Amino acid sequence: MALNPKELILSILDNPRSFEHVYPLVSEDFTYVSLNYEDADLKKIMPWCGTGQGVESLVMTFVDVEKFWHVDNFSIEAAFGQDENVAVFGRFTYTSTVMLKSVTSPFAVFAKVRDGRCTYMQFMEDTFATGASFKSGGSWTFRSNPKGDEVTI
Image 1 (cartoon, rainbow, N blue to C red):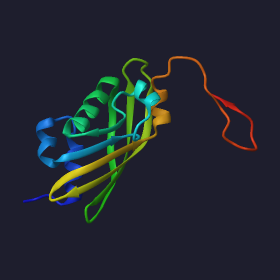
Image 2: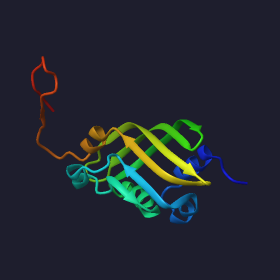
Image 3: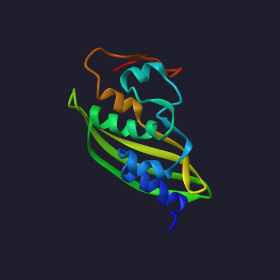
Image 4: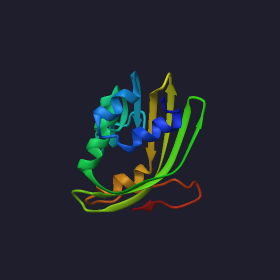
């Protein structure tokens, strides 16, 4: 029996590190967007970031994430589907393998399913927090509030 779009996306997220599991669930022209479309600086910290093509772009992202972090928790809190569109929301806690810093972040997935296969998936998280789990020193100074002072973190 064929999976409906929401079930298909939840199945992918249930075992995203297995090429054998994911391959039959995605289309040949599958596109995966991890955290942003393209950001050269973020890619230096998290090499999987950006837009990728093919099943490998999704599977290798989740394989690489487990090299950079221990996945302490990954829980789906809600999933919705309308026609070909699916949205999934949840939270995860990761601990960076080098710095041993833990972070909890919400996540959101937007996906499209056509003809029983996922054609597009976009994964978003709090990249400010997850990137900071790798911070080894220094500070950042920000000026965001037009009426406020600079903030140094």
